[in-house]
Length: 115
Length: 115
Image (tube, rainbow over all chains, first blue to last red):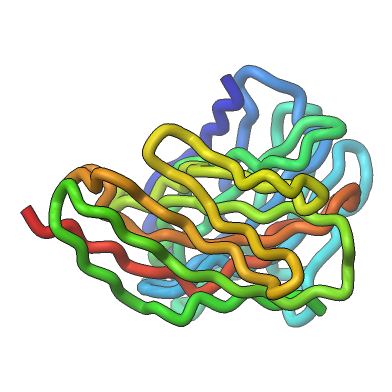
């Protein structure tokens, strides 16, 4: 149980375009989903927290207008990287937790390469 | 703000031996959760073990156990009978109880298993 999927697993895009990444909880309802970013050989850094039906909460230093997060249902959250630039290239990982739960279950991640 | 410190960038152990990974944290909260996550080369984050701060008993999961010292704010992971499949990055993480917070991660320890 507690399976989280992400799509796509790999994406290459041109600078200036937008990219959408989906995060789905497959066998539970995720009241809260989280988006992390991981640079090579580094740890995970929390970007934002999204609760179903409400606006996302962004961590300090994360541009809200660049990283648009939508948590439209209890099983789906999306991260849209707008006007992507090469410095946005990274590994993006989502996680989800169910109501009242303290453990986060992670998706397999999405590698983004902006050319 | 809470911080998590992993002072061992890399550890090496012989197959079938025991290894201990260190983690210390800093928080002003009294009730929280601590986690160890494993990230193999696939980069999928896998929960290894979880400890609730209000529980004095150390958590165990098969070959994995923790030494939780609340007063010292220390949370080490012991892996017994190390196996080749244990080779991965190991991240220590913190979350305060009850909030819709994301996880605060340490920088990770790269565990190498020598056959």
